[in-house]
Length: 225
Image (cartoon, rainbow, N blue to C red; front, top):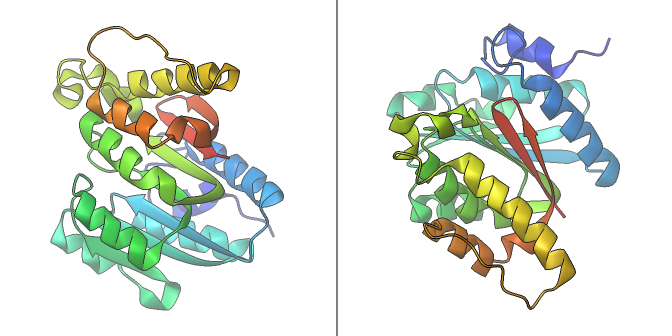
């Protein structure tokens, strides 16, 4: 019998379930669409933020249920998070900071590229920006990048008084991918206060690698071409 991603979220007590944030339907729909466009026999997923490992187990059990071999990698600052590792289930945990580009480079070199990347880490907007710029290029073709709990873009303690909003960053990507669809050589004028991370994103041609951006309640899904 088919079991939904939400079923495994509830069973593993992760706040992605319909009992809490209710993100699972968005993710399940995105994975199904991805597999139709880009059929694979195995699925590699990176999640920033481990805690007790419920989310890692959720992904593993769901992917098992739909017949996909998989490798699930979680990263976290807390050394205790390594207890969630289960190599028998192809669940791996690495301890490090999502802001540390050298650490992220080692992760993608060892485990990447990925079909899906989920940022459920600090929820600090500057950290979300930095991880996105560092990791988006390591998604496979048509892969999915998720930024969770973006409600923190409106909370001063997470967005440095509004100067580093992840919501605003992603809205600016909407401008980029549409503007550059008209002309690859033009220059899009912007207001003062642009994030340095956004400049880096444009230099890396992230804008031309994005197929679509989906804004849901407190979560954003960015699909690679």
